[in-house]
Length: 375
Image (cartoon, rainbow, N blue to C red; front, side, top):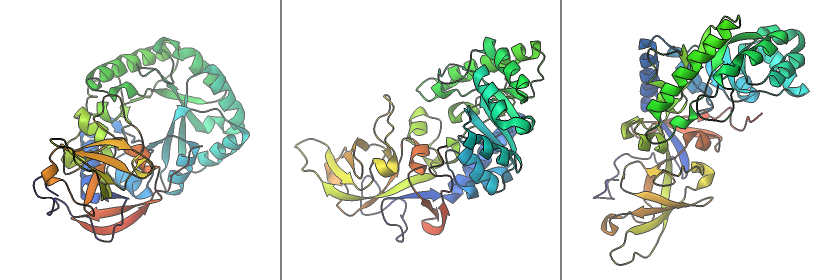
């Protein structure tokens, strides 16, 4: 729908789609995949995208076909899904603490794919090697460095004891990695990329001085991946770039025409408009399909794709409140709108499948195969 004429949709939501439902525009998706692959390749870097964003085998296949060296995942469960789909190189980019069950699953995975895992403590590395037993030598380990996000990871000066513990445990120390998560804030991508470069470079120097051959230095989230040029990194691991979301839109890291994923929603209720006030109405997409993330700097709980001046001001489980600046053009009950989630990774973990659209027509449905694989 246009802002001035709510009777004429800017983009048609296919009539087969009932609301609320996630829609992926496959043409925009393919364009986003190719653009990132080309940009990373031009910088002489390797691309190992984070699949926790999409969790879909068909999208993974597109990323690999575009030149990705493998995939990054969040859990052993996600790795199992993508290994079964034929992905041969998988990096579980978080420190693991292996239970006996996880150790057995990781051993089986290493028989079907090239597996790397994250470590950030001597205790974790020792337990990892002990749990894997004779299979430890088939698993690569990357020491995680804290480059400013202050989640997991060690200071760059402290990587050697972790790597030494991993080597003693029989693991193959292949490099260092970091997650510049603090890049997801206004004005931070450039600074986060700078801190990432310094941290990876220093960590690699410390490991080299300790006798380790650092073959991979892994970094790069979606806000910083395009900023990584002549730096210490040898690969980047962006995830959100395939879809874009409202956070990336507000950060200026993508444009509206780059948004491949929206949620189809219907206006189901309207508030009485106060004199000289904005119109308010309710749509049938709440936190159980949009996700509930809202950074302090975000302007709302998501955005309306075709109406940049509207704001989602409140969110409940199955509904959202939309504030519309001009009461005279507010859509009527029954109108359908496209919503951009704030954090697309959460939205994808809330649905079993998605509608694939092209040119306003429904062309396929994809199963979110790694949905809920949280361990």
